[in-house]
Length: 271
Image 1: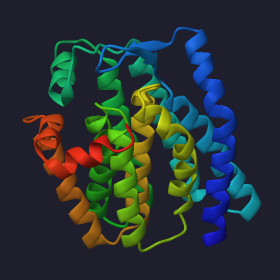
Image 2: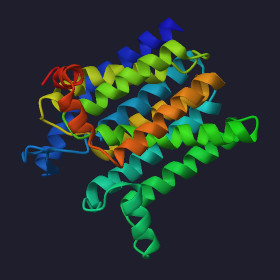
Image 3: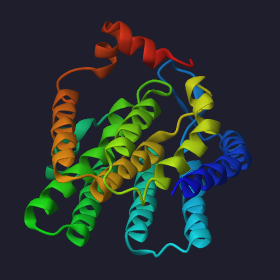
Image 4: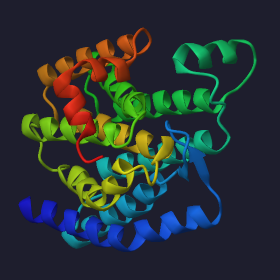
């Protein structure tokens, strides 16, 4: 399996070395820019590069190593669809409506928001995947919640340069260590190859990945967790996800990080 992981990393690295600067320039030339937290106009939706590069990389790995589609197909379909709704939210989303509560209230009032579409699509995909891979009702519930909450998790931290990607890397490493199935490890190694090229741009405030990026990083964590972790590990991940989402509605993660010396140091690394 190590050869597959190395090959996946190398493929994504090479594709990113070529593709990321081209997509960045395309966004700049077409004025696809948005203000970051400092008020600077920088290219956003750079998560598009993740969609193209990761999808091509995964297909090439399947071709080289003769992988069967099955669960990988479920992942790729969900990955691309979440990227699409994330892109929709980036381009025409109402930034004044925040959180689950805001989108639910808008839906009840008869107003459909891109955030509502994103949440609904994420939950539906989570449920469908869980129905296909789970053995009983308990597994269906747990897998659905894990995939849905992970899909939204990265977006909660995407408030400062590089922060959400650091969260993704940390959680993915933990999952690689705790996984009971190693067949899907190349999902993460493919992203590591991309992030070697992309992350410096994000850290220096030269680009933002947008919801299209945070959505697909999140759903990758969720699906990998559902595919590879034992029941006990899933319960631990689920409890952590619930706690983080409840906290996100009540407190500012940015303020918590600013008030903690270690978290602030990690958060500022590379900037």
